Length: 190
Length: 190
Image (cartoon, helix red, strand yellow):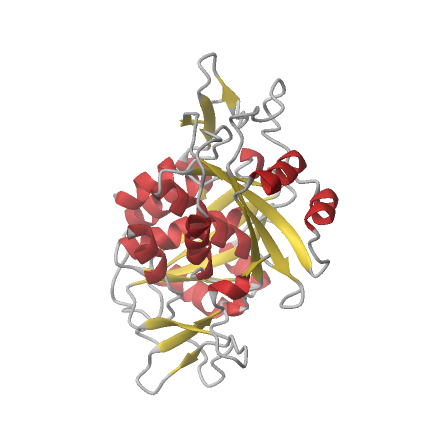
């Protein structure tokens, strides 16, 4: 099943070939996938800021917190940082609440990225005040999350949560990132 | 681009061939796509209740509100109702907040449904109290939304929002459902 492969390969990636430039046209085609998403009451309150240049990337990167469970790793080093970002905003002049619209839209974006050989990570742990100030984002927009994008430079594998129930992802000696997922029979209830 | 076609064809569908049974194994394979989703801090607080039988469907259907903008239409008639449902729950024993996890997971589910020739609609306007009582859903689970599923019996087309800014979907004389989406240049801001 093709979609299962795409979903399976769409993993949160946090290290990239930073030199790999992502053209603005590519980012726009990813937002096009978000544009076509379902939206609660079709209100479509989401707006997007795109970044793919050194100047903006340098502003955005330090505003994001990376991989809280990897205590010894502060985030991707120079050369392994995302080469583009899509900042997902909620336009409060359109709606007072955004439900899970940004999840729906962003999943389309990251699936599209995987399809193009890119990878990404939705980051919700953000210095929102700092990001707003430096990019001069008007108060009308709530910063929902940031999708970091790039050409992946790490391998991410899915595993099954063990009997101890630990869901923390971890990285092995060879740099492979392991993500334990709850088994199907645990998440389907009767 | 294959993913764009899939996204474009994944429309909120509200009338179905109700006789078309969806096997439990199909619903499980859709939840498998949700299982493989990204989840905030990988906490995976989402749980799922599946329904594909007459008894459960008859309980769930009247708890859902359909297509608020179609004032003359109370929802699908007998024979055109969903043949299955996936109730998406947030397990409060795992997390106090669910962010947009249910958007991410549910988008995988509806994309998977489209891929299988099915269609669906995420419904968030729910008589939650009634649904909880009749299905005896424990308080530990927050009812996030319900994905109605079936073999689509209607055509849904995407259009561009006009100069009046009206985003209300509408149905024409031949029963085609029209959904105005904001243009790309309106949702990308600088």
